[in-house]
Image (cartoon, rainbow, N blue to C red; front, side):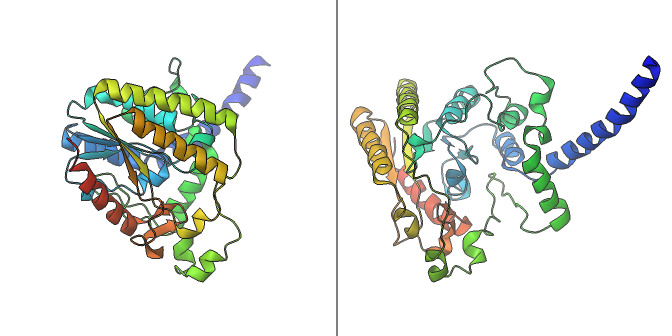
Length: 312
């Protein structure tokens, strides 16, 4: 009876394990910013002067190709300050020429919860960068890509291998130069249609408890950067004009108050504010209301480059 039960278990689990192995293989062979960044770091022998941190807004806004001083963009979707801080600490010993840390403080950055030790991208930071953000010991599954977020990667596998459209194309600096396809392109960059959109992703729910937690870590991070002697550039990335109409005034006021306090307290901090630059950034520069496309990224990166040249 026991042998028969074991046989049944094997007959069940072997196909399941096989399916997961195939899914893992397919996931790892989809181009990503992680694999591209590793290749970029190795090619440049870790001689970067600037490190970019933040969420997808920074990931899509900063193309190091257009920045004269060597720049590594480690921003990634849904990446918050707690993860930024861990990545910085995990990478800085490998970056002996690092001078400037560039990160974002978006409109509602202080009132959106941090990633925490269970953030699914921790698997990728560990696998590709060798950085343990789990705040515990490492298990075998911690380096598995597909199992970190099966619904997300199941969709990515279908998009990449079956649909074959809008594939990510990374340049030598790890930037996706093909990220044009999005809400605005779907609407033909028609400003009337964009203005008529009933909803889009924007946080309008104040949360003072999260604000207190986030600002505490934010100032801890700034203290650390000051002690290390880094230049700090805090970015307010361009947003499309309809985004500004939906902002919650309380969230906006608290964010700007913290930024003003940062400039008063830290001599090494510079604010790079193009958030409401609707003159230089037009509808064809945006992927959606809160993200630039590669055209907008070239404009933004060139402006950032001009600022970086002024820093000592």
